[in-house]
Length: 115
Image (cartoon, rainbow, N blue to C red):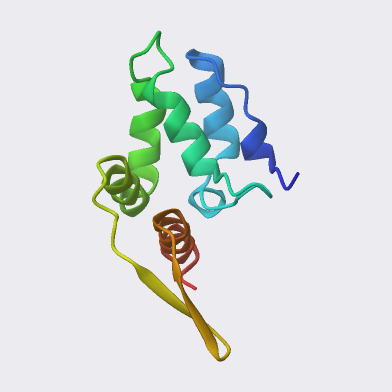
């Protein structure tokens, strides 16, 4: 399914998840996606928003923000609907407009890999 060890961290709002995060998460893995397109960053951030009985689990959110502030800002923009700009990518002689999710994923990949 294209999952990495970072995609398989058990998600509980407790110290065990923080320990797994500290062991397995590095900025270089945040943009890795499953075959379905779910990045490590999105999985952790989306879960952490409501992990504490509907409230944010700040231990993980702070780590994600500190690890890569650019990714954090991109996700915040998407959450608030500000990432609606159309991004165009060329592919040989054809070009198409990316969805906002593809644009964010491309930006995340570029921010973490420099490519």
